[in-house]
Image (tube, rainbow, N blue to C red):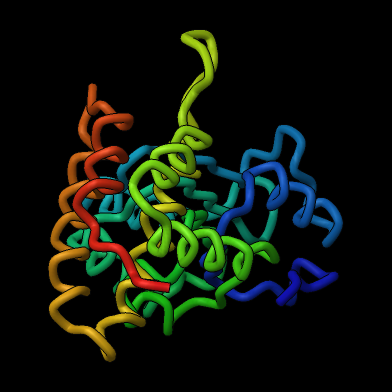
Length: 225
């Protein structure tokens, strides 16, 4: 789906998959809501969004806009804890009427269905290609998997890691493993166990993403093509 042409027509909550904050700001400007130095736009970027962040967001959303009739909250995060998602439910169930929320995540399908049901989901166009990449990874032998994950890691010490890309990759594997669970429950169980471990520690401060991805390549069973 696309955003409305008029800001007055915006839904109170969007879950946005794989898009940047700049894309959202451009959409707001195109809909007639200025994004440059607008006091009614709040931006929050966090590696992990926890329950304290959810409660703080609710408190801020209850305040009235400063210069307009509505206000926007843009949250970009690689991970929302289950506790945070449950805390957000009440905020999205009982919107103030003046607040519009944009929750930017790598993969919307990793969120609780109850949270998704209270929002409109905007998916990135390249999602099918991501699914194809995940499927190819699961079918590949270990040496090819290691080459594939090398593309997700910085090529030099001066290049920053793209945590969003890593989380999209892991989430894509999770979806493909869920599909496999119908045909081979034992395969999916072992694969998901290794994957959940990688996703859990991926968010830790100082985590070695190279090591976690390599463990994923080694421990997730291969699908026989």
